[in-house]
Amino acid sequence: MSPMQPVCLITGASAGIGAALAREFAAHGHALVIAARRQAELDRLAAEIAAAGHARPHVMTADLGAADGPELLAQAMQAAGLEPSIVVNNAGFGLLGEAAELDRARQLAMIDLNIRALTELSLRFLDSIRRHRGGILNVASIAGFLPGPGMAVYHASKAYVVSFSEALHAELQAEGVRVCALCPGPVATELFARAGIPHDYFPDYLYRSAERVAREGYHGFMAGRRVVVPGLPNRIMTLMPRFLPREPVLAMMQRRWMRKRRT
Image (cartoon, rainbow, N blue to C red; front, top):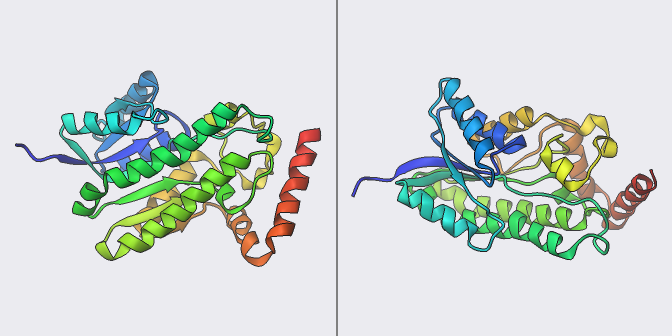
């Protein structure tokens, strides 16, 4: 039996931060598997990376929000002779609106993708990650540090990702395995359009480009950092719950949501 080729698996790679992370990892010589639901976008990204002089990524379509999505992706990788040394869990989405008013099935689908699929992929490939002394980069958000009226389930899902990633970091660092939570602030990507978030929903000073997020995320991950938050204003936002009681932080977020809801 021929040996399996170690690769960096990047989910949600068809656009936005995921595509930027694929370009960043490819530029540093990593062999890639890029996965998402949309074949055409993945093919274009693979061609772009190859045209830049890097190894062409393996393209695999996957619906990771489906119950069997991670299993089917794992089977496809095994059949292709590929195993992850690095897993980048970027696939996810958000929804803007009050939890009682948003579609319940869509909110549960958010949990399936943002939490369940991320957890399954993180744990499913741990054997190969350990063997190659690789790592896991989980894309969270500064939302994971704050309660989020107006995006309650999204904020809660990202809080899970931060907590899960920090715990895995502590459990695996002695084995030389990196685990990092990448926590960007707002980035103008397709996620915003899908969530129904207008560009002016967040202050301009919090925005960072997908390329900057990917660059800082890659270097922080490779340096073994536990959490990476691109941009000083965003880092300050994540510190608020450490220095302020929970109740006033929640009240501040609620006032902000109510102001935005009225505009």
